[in-house]
Image (cartoon, rainbow, N blue to C red):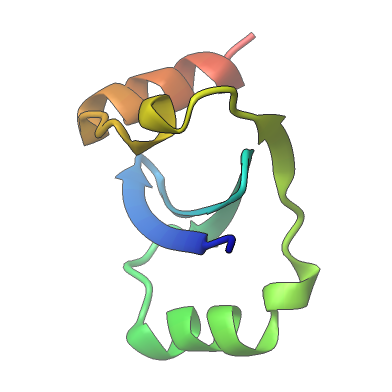
Length: 89
């Protein structure tokens, strides 16, 4: 039996709010990031994104060899730093 886990995290990295979608199933981990704009996103915008535009979200795949590593919690500030470093050239 396989399980599918998904999560949505909304963060603010000046000047934009960003939505980070994560999903896991079997040994596959996929992630996607969407810019929501400079103002705080309304609940209706988030609901519309998840319910009506889910099929348009492009996920990037990564194979995870150990499920214990994928379940480990990472500090949100560390995630922000890592995301910022990956975007900068």
